[in-house]
Image (cartoon, rainbow, N blue to C red):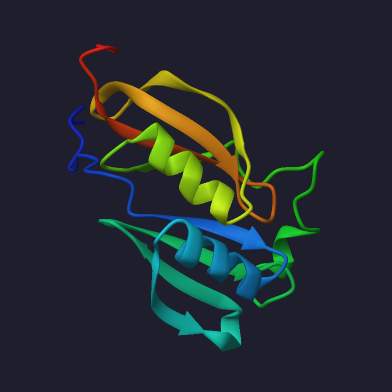
Length: 144
């Protein structure tokens, strides 16, 4: 038996989030974060969003795909720890102003985190369903 895998992981293709209100989630991911709708599948209670080279799929907790997952996420039960989206450029002042204008709180201070491309600055916020989102900038000389 060969110990080599017949494949290599390239990147995250998509993440599927269970949400309480599809329209509210679509507004957040499109208007606040800049995703775009790739396809809607109303019979499944699903919206596929483009997020750069990846996708974020939203499914309604009461839809065909979401209901088997049980109750909606809340403060004590999460769908995931966090979703990290690689962004460029990373301008802290511009990011904070953008989110403040849209009524979205940024969690704490910018900090250096390790990501797929190396260490770089990131900040955190939450979507309307309480899912944590990390926005990660490019590798930074300050953080390597």
